Amino acid sequence: MPVKTAVQQLQMRQQLNSILLALFFSINAFSGQHAIAQDKLFSVAELKADIQFLKTRLENNHPGLYLYSAKSVIDHVFDSLENGISQPLTGREFYKHISIISSIIKDGHTILLPGGTNASHYLPYHFAIRNNQLFTQMVCTGDRTIPAGAEITSINHVAAADIIKQLCERQVRDGDNLTYPLWIISNYFRQYYSFIFGQPDSFDIRYIKDGQERSTVVKALSRDSIYYYRQQHYPASILTSQVNKGLTLSLENENRYAVLTIKDFHNDVLRKEYKQNFDKEISSFFEQINNSKTDNLILDLRNNQGGDIENGVFLLSYLLDKPFSVVKEYYCVDNHELKPCKGPSLGLHDPQPNNYKGQLYVLINGGSFSNSGIVSSCLQVNKRATFIGQETGGNPHVINGFSKNISLPNTKFQLQIPTKQFVMTSKANNNGRGVMPTHFVEPRIIDVLENRDAELVYTIDLIGREKNVK
Image (tube, rainbow, N blue to C red; front, side, top):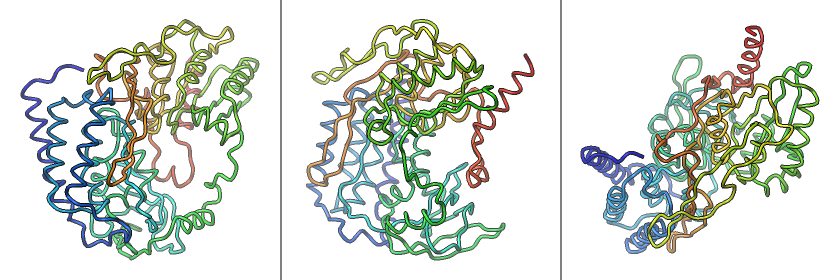
């Protein structure tokens, strides 16, 4: 990363002061909402001790702590957070106070979650976010007043855009990428909403239906009740059996194209949940692809949160036709200094003798994170693929991983801190963004509601158009 000028540093500090000041006053802004009954009140001394503990652990272990924000900025943030504690806070209030560090550190593998809050009540909807607007995707309650596809304009008198903003600025991301935090919030909205805004017994919701803004009060429901109504209203969305579904291959339209979907690169997840072996399945798939003489392969990495890097290398060995590099360097913190260290899959890797030589299209989105970003990066560097969808959540140049779990001593907040930094290309190339799609395609709300796969439909059409050109 280029060194920031003194003027830029000053501008950043002024911006941080504004964020932290607004955060300090917003702690009590929603005190009218019911706090979780079991949410313990922590003393000023306990809270400050946890902030100091958090900062020390990050400094001692995190290899990318200063990748996007200078040490002076990080120090200033922690000083402001500690000085902002002037009275006892509940666990929720404290989480809202300190989780702002996620948008300062800007590391997708540095995850901070509240401790046991005995959460019991949630918004009974699954949401989709488009253009800073909040839409209901699934109605998981017996009250069907608010239909699927309605735009939510406010919840408990807080504008939806402001809710999205507050959740997003407290969410993890790699660098300046926003597709990953928005992907997380879209998929886990009710959980993160409860972390920041609490768990009231009911929600006063304003929404737009048939072009008119309306309001209603919706009762909060337990997780079990939400799951029950989701199962009743959307049975196809419930994954009753995961076996053999983590890695899938389909040959379509008289073998004109194949779709290879990889939901996860984690060996433990593939073995336990899907009962699949990565190497065995991938080898079998490419044997089928080559035997069928398929000219076009669509690799679906959407919503793939990553996993074992060796699996990414094995996949790439079937997609590339010359020796390739995946990770060039690893760095670890040693006595407060960032130093080179060992890590898996260094050096050059050879392609498989029967590597795929046809056209390759890769489907990506904000949920394509960590190892999915690494695989996409390698394909991009080797100019091997056409990317369709949205910017990946994972950074193609440098990331941090191999996380260790830590618990804050008083609040028991759970923290994951990465211990190794991966350099895939060069830190000088890092602009804080993910792999950009060759063709930007984002599903509309109507696509989501009707389960229409916009990215896949676009890709199939693109294959047809390119064939006609040839």
